[in-house]
Image (tube, rainbow, N blue to C red; front, side):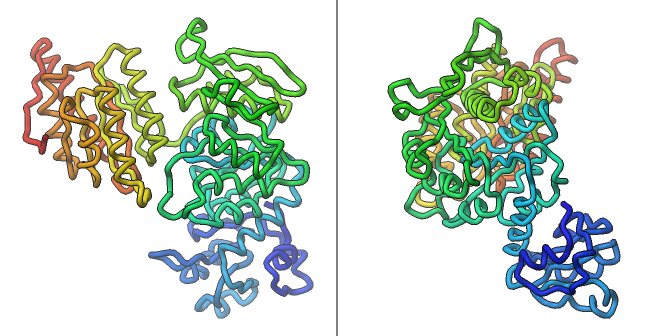
Length: 496
C-alpha cells in the first residue's frame, strides 16, 4: 500500500489538512500488535475488544494516522500530531480505502468465491500464477468486509496478480465485497449448502454470482458448469461466462459457451488428470498430476486451468506450481503415524466440502489398502436444512462403509438415521472420550487405518487430531512391544 493521507481522506469522505498529501501511509491494520511505522490504525469494535482502546498503543508503535468512529480516549493528549479521521463505520471506510488502492493498481485482479475449497484453490492458483509473476493473495481465509480490505491494502501494488477470496454469509455481502474488489476476473468455484441460515430465499448461487455484476470494464467471469443452478445464475449475471467442468456431460454445458474440462487420467499415474480446452483461441489438452485426488482436486484443477488460459499464462506451469503450493493448516493435512494416516481437514465444514473430503479420504484408503474411519463434527449455520443435510451425510457414510464413525456436536441422531445399523457410530464430547472410543476399537481394526477428521469450526476438532494421534502412537508402540498384537487397552465410550 502506498497512499497519501489526503487520498485516504477523500476516499472516506472526510476533510483533512492541506499538507496531508505529504503524509504517506504504507499499511493498514486493525490490530495494534501489527503496527509498523507508517501504518494507518483502524479502530474496529469487536465482540470482545474495542480497537479504540488501543489507539494510543498503536501510535506508540509508529502509527501515522488513525481511522476511528469516535475520538480515542487519551490520544489527543499523547499524540496531538497524529491525524484522526472520524467516520460512521470503520469497516466500511476500510473498504472505501481499499477500493481507492485497487483503482491505482494496474495488474490483474481475481476475485474467487464458492461454497467449498476457496482457500485451497486460492493457494493453488496463486502458486501457479506465481510462476509467471509476483502474486498478492488473501492471507488465510480473510475474505469478509474486514479481511478483504486489509488483504488488499497489504499488497505493494507491484504485483502482476491479485488473488482474493470473497466469502458471504448474508444478503448484500457479495455486492459490498465486489464493489471493493472490482475484479478483472470473477470466479465461482462451486455452490452448495453453506451459510444458508443467513442468505435468505434467493439461494446460494444467486448470491455468489453477484460477484459477476461487479466486474471491472471488460472483466471476465468463470464458473463451474457442474451445478445447474450456478450455471443458470452465472449466465443471468454475465451472459459471456466461461465454464469449467469435471463432471457435466457436453450436452449439459450451456450451449455455445467456451469451456475447460478435466477428467481422471489413471494411465498417466496416481492423481493424474487430463485437461482439455475448448476456447475461442485454443483447442488442445494437457495432463497434470495433483498432490491429492478426488472430485475436489479435479474441480480445483479445472478452475485453475481455465484461469491460466483466460489470462494467457503458460498452462505448462500448472504441474510445477501445484507442487510448490503450500495450503494453510487443517486443510487436507496428511499426518502419518506408524502404518496409519490421519487426514486433518478440520478447518471448517459444510455439506459440499464434507462430501468432497469423504470421497477423497475414502479413495485414499482404497489406494493404500487400509481401513477407512471418520472423526466428524456437526456442520453449522445451515438453518432449516440442517436436519436433512446431516441425514444425507449419514447416507453417504453408509455407502462408504467406514469401520467406525465418531461424532461430536449436534445432529448425531440425524446422521445415525441416515447411516443405519451396520457401521459402529459413537458420539464424544471431549478428547478423552474420543481416545477411549478409538482405543476400544483399535484391537479389532488393526494398525493400518486412514482417518478423516472434519467438522465446523465450532467443534474445535484440531484438538481431536492430536488425541487421535496419541491413540494411534500408543497402538503402534504396543504392537512393536508384543510382536504384532495391539496393546491398546479398551476404554468405555458411548456407542450405539
